[in-house]
Image 1 (cartoon, rainbow, N blue to C red):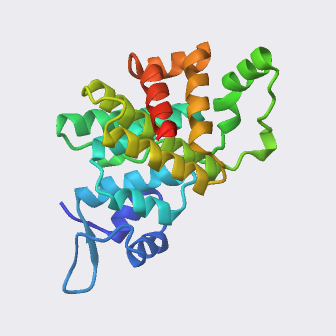
Image 2 (tube, rainbow, N blue to C red; image 1 turned 45 degrees about the horizontal axis):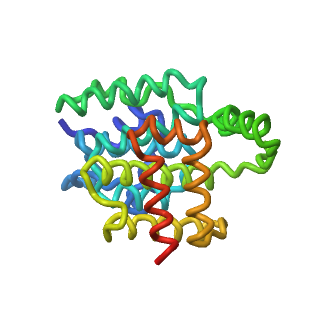
Length: 248
């Protein structure tokens, strides 16, 4: 089944002008254009639009959304990552999380989600302070550290860093699960790229600094448990891999 611009705008509750703009910048290209000049969209375009709008709810700029989606990640991975970001950031947006859950379930089964339900729950709220509240309280009580200022949080920057941190930890956890050693080229390159990202985004981080941070994560109960909940042994694996990188 193919949908016109008017159909898509009505389903997703966005303007026709927005769809034209997405087409113009190459973010959402129609399945085809009819002989009469009408833009027509299929189910794949609907799914991509859903992914775009989830990222927009997370305050991602259009340029960055295009880079992510053009990297050809599989749809299930995209939806899973978006779900994790939203759950960490927005505790009150239950409708949006439910929509992502349904999308994941349908995609995992190879089924097509009812188009009328694909865009339920879209709202725009900034909840990073709530997402960080537990960590902030722990650092304050345990180390008397009060480095987080509520009014200093930059949402787009935090979203970008959260995506990178999640990708880094998931890839590192997979390497551990697959039996790769801490000093393999794959693991060491992953650490190098992550440190480069941190430096490019305002966190001046030398190799020794990163190794010291990894050692802290291993020794500290709160952060060690966060890592171990992802993959048993991840905190230790990160630590020795980071120290190997710093040593070389």
